[in-house]
Image (cartoon, rainbow, N blue to C red; front, side, top):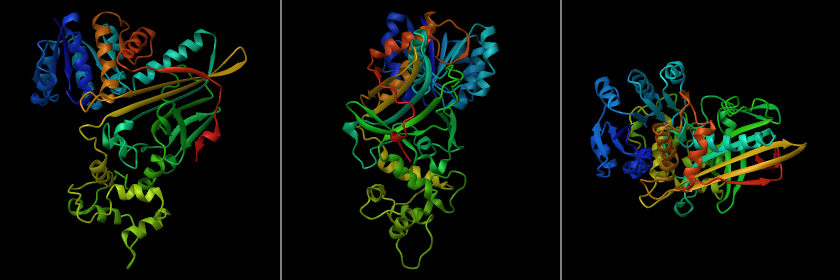
Amino acid sequence: MRNILIIGAGRSASSLIQYLLQKSDQENLHLRIADISLELAQKKTNNHKNASAIALDINNSEQRNTAIQKADIVISMLPAHLHIEVARDCLIYKKHMVTASYISDAMQELDAAAKENNLIFMNEIGLDPGIDHMSAMKVINEIREKGGKLILFESFCGGLVAPESDTNLWHYKFTWAPRNVVLAGQGGAAKFIQEGTYKYIPYHKLFRRTELLNVEGYGRFEAYANRDSLKYRSVYGLDNVLTLYRGTIRRVGFSRAWNMFVQLGMTDDTYTIDNSETISYRGFTNLFLPYHPTDSVEIKLRLILGIEQDDVMWDKLLDLDIFNSKKIVGLKNASPAQILEKILSDKWTLEPHDKDMIVMYHKFGYEIDGVQKQIDSKMVCIGEDQTYTAMSKTVGLPVAMATLQILNGKITNPGVQLPINKEVYEPILKELEDYGVVFNEKEVPYMGYNPDNVRA
């Protein structure tokens, strides 16, 4: 039997475990599922004969070393900052490794050693990063192969709630880490290129500069800019492209509403609120408003935000119950961002019957034989249930497929890498189609940078 060690049995591991178990007889696999919670790891085995569960504290070097030594390949589904310890052990024991996380500086430093030992450390092979790289590079390389020159690349992705589970005024529920949603866009201005000019959007303006998108069968969406759209400019070979923009997808109207929290200061994570555990939701809201001897919290909030009582923005705030004087925050030494996350989680947590949805949208502008053309590539994936979510599928399946490709000698290029080579992305994208992850590519009139499509 070929042994695959999977470290981390959280929600994102569900679909990858299911995939590998379904292949286990045919591919002669045994999965060792490791987690700090033995109960969770056991649950993920599904009582399959080709799977076993072990308790593993990633900070316990003896446990970690023992588990890695027994494996033929290691999949790390841990939080990103914990991958490096696993990677260092994989170097020592000569094991290939696969993760869905961004390549950290510490991970990149292992590249030379991985190559010396003929080891593949495949990173960024989940959804975003992952499927975005693969689906983009496929089209970019096809354009180049026919003699085209890229002049525009825009890429958008979002984890959303499926239409049938869209039951609140925000048209949004948490389908991934809530904290990441609350802190989105912080840490510096968004940076991108439009028509050959560098552009920057500071955090306090980010959610009022959105691009509108249309996805057939699913309606209109909006996207706000990611913090650094230029991170992959050289990696994709797009150093001379005129427009390069990456963004996060939400339903139309979300960003304008979210901007209210940004302007109030509720998304700040740099300080803590005194006596935060005893404050009511109403009291928390009032912290960010000026004192007035007679005006209510509601009136002060409408005045400071400049919204009327019949504005849908007001209805969205009421929908979150932020004026409730009986609901208590209950978090000690909490930052405004942590308290806001708690309030939102009351309303935006997926119900057991809810389904999530992933939307990805690429735009490729190129010039060939003096003519400017454009290809739009769109993908929508709907989850099955609360275990096999669209997020779990789109993160976990590429990880599982790459693992099997490495084990079977189909991926051979050693070193610390992301999936931008044809030997990696071609078979995985093709197989993903069998699981409902399908990109519809369409030639459309070249639009370039269209200011009519940007809401300021």
